[in-house]
Image (tube, rainbow, N blue to C red; front, side):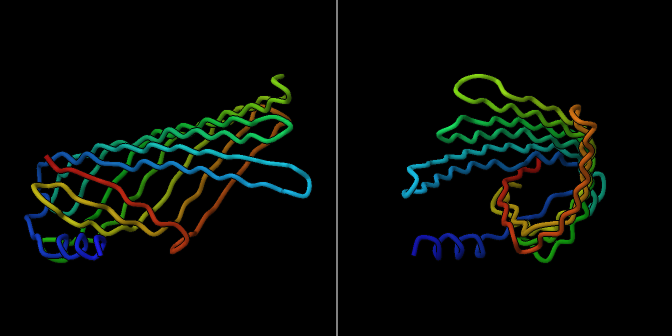
Length: 195
């Protein structure tokens, strides 16, 4: 019932969309924790993932915004044998094209590209067993829906995207290239504010 009231309230409030010459500040934050236990073997694993993705842009036209974005991510996987730690960083630029549907809703698509770095460490019984570092590039397109709530505050809803990433690791002369197309597979909710 509370969710229905929230959706109704969001659809009733209509405020002006962002205008040319405004600053956009927004981003996403995420946390996941998962535990799996194999009872017959007495084996248990736990994984935690944290991600923070802020961005700042300037709306130089009624429909166009350009700016900078970065992402910091960290994960830890523990089991009875040891643990693995992963840290990632992305920094780049984005351009956004927005199509207002009415005073409350707008559709937009972001095109982002930049540099990325990943580091991982594997431990067994507290001893460092392996360490790796990779550098590369990323590019992606993300379509989303913007709901204007009040005084430039809004919620951003995306349901996937299209992207390409490269990583060149410093061990074993390993290069990784990834392409993803995941519309409808993931849902991201972000907050943004136009000043």
